[in-house]
Structures are given as structure tokens and as C-alpha cells.
Image (cartoon, rainbow, N blue to C red; front, top):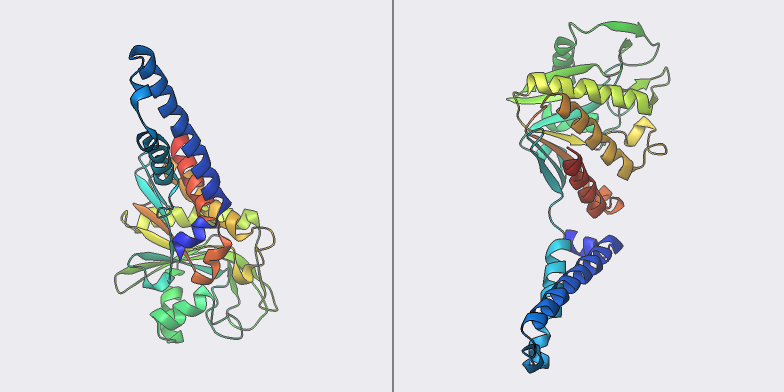
Length: 284
């Protein structure tokens, strides 16, 4: 459970202690001033009544430190970022689908069935490969082909950061190329490629989403080979930073919803992410 997970986090107990001691110090100082101007009154308070002070401090500390949903609203720009645990394809908003620069969709020999692309084909198109291929080709019709690669599946290569936007049953699917596929159908990426891809993605979301919320997986994991360079905690912060930097240039959309797979949740320090989100509000 989320609450028990956060209660086992040292960050929670450290925050509880800091807020508790701060509240206790403030209350003690207030009582000291009260006793200065009304001497003798505090001497009439017995033990059960004096326990109200530490109890109030503990209540305040618990209120400040208690795990809340990981989300933050920003006024400049007017947007919100949320982290939720669940299924990307059960979100009721537009979705981000990470792809390679060849926009391959065939499973399982080129694209893993468990990947976001594989689930996109299965869950949205019900494994109707020709329908998804046709929609991708239509979305890429005006995009420039920068080269070819001799491999199974698609051979045309598009620039890193190319976004093919598919509208299917009133939902926008932003298919962004952030990995490069080699002749052995092995995908790879880099920090630079990923940042450029995200910049182009937010530009496309800004243009096509009409301000509606968008949900994205933690981009940079899986078969991209980025997990050793960008661990999951850093990948979440990387995604948040790119969205905020783009939003400060011009509002992207009303909400970015980062969807964490249940099996990945225990690898993320949610309290640290909440502090990170809060720090961005203070600097905005």
C-alpha cells in the first residue's frame, strides 16, 4: 500500500521530527511569552493539561509530513503534474507512446509485446497491425525521411524527436521517436536524444492537444538502454524538468500525468519526487 510504503521511508520520519521539533519550539516560545506577561498562571496547569502542547506539535508534524498524492499545481504556468500508479492505457486522457526512429510496430521479434508500443498495438488496435501502420504512415506523411537502415521491419529512418500524432476514438496518441534502431533491431538512445525528443513532444502536445491533459510513461526505461545512465528516479525528474522548461516558454497543457507501473512503484521515492515538484513551484 502507498501509505505503508511511505511510512517506511526515512524521509517521512525525518520530516516528522523536523516539523515536530519546530512546532514544539514555537509553542514553547509562545507559552514563555504568555508566562512573561501573565506570571503564575502556567504554574496552575497540571500534567494532563500540559501534554496538550506536545500532542499539538505531533499533530502538526503528522499533518505536514503525512503522505499525500504526489502532485503539484503551478500558477506560472497554469498547469499540474501528477504521479499515479496504474495502467497507462486506462487513463482517460491523451497518451504519449515512445517509439524508435523507424516507428516499428511488429511484435514480438522487433518490438517486445510488453513494451508500451507492443501494448499500444494490442490494447488500442487489438493487434490490427495494418490499421496502426496506415495511421502511422498518414501521421508521418509530411515528416522528412533522413535515411534508411537494412533490417527487418521498417527501414525508413526519421529524425530523433519526430512525433507522429494519431487520433483514435477521440484520443490523441503522441508517438515520439526517442531511440535509434540499428540493423539488428536493437534500440539505443542518449541523454541528448531524449531531451530533444521531449522538447519536440511538448511542442506537438501544445499544438494538438487543445490544452487537454496528457499521460506519459516513464520514458527512458525498457529497451532503450538508458536505465544505466538514467535510473528510474532520475528519469522521473528528467521528464518533469523537460515539461516544466517547455511550459515556462508557453503553456503545454493543463496536466502532465506520469503513470508508474505497479512493479516500478517500490523503486521510486515518492516523497522525494513530491519535494522536487514543490521546489519547482518555489522557483517558478
